[in-house]
Amino acid sequence: MSLQNEPLQLYQSWPLDAKAEQFRLGGILDVKDCALPAMQSPNDHVLSLHGVGRWSCDLADERLEWTDAVFDIFGLPRGAAVSRAEAVSLYCEHSRAAMERLRAYAIKHRRGFTLDARIVPAQGKPRWMRLIGAPVCEGRRVVRLEGLKIPIGEEA
Image (tube, rainbow, N blue to C red; front, side, top):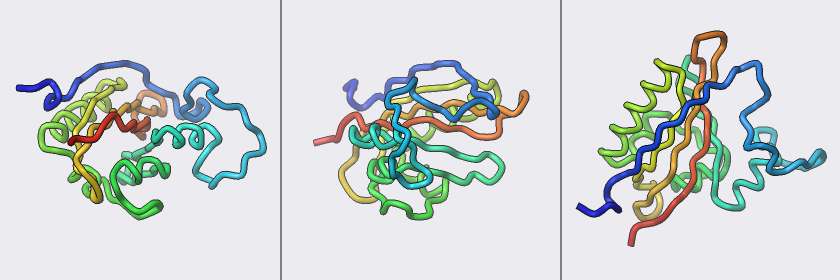
């Protein structure tokens, strides 16, 4: 079996406190007056130039929030209302199973994770993306997962 067909699973740990400042990537950009959509920060704009998107999933109602780059990775129209079930259906079976296991572990143990996942976008060829997720906690309770989705290659 080729390594190209097997996702690389890396485990990381870093629960975030919901009272802390929003999830950032260590000050990639410090711009004060940047005219971006309300849901996007200047950091999101810089990330999107490289195809990297930020995502969030509220655990109370499984509502997803994505930056434009995540819509692009999944081949969906920017700003579309996407349910978690619809997004999960775009993962290939092995990647979907691994993602669900890591998601459950992250919620139960308040741990972050990284997974290279194979998806089949709504528009486009199958591709690999790196999914980075971290729990956001209120006290000891996880209320949301958030992180990054990074395109890492299309299949021929």
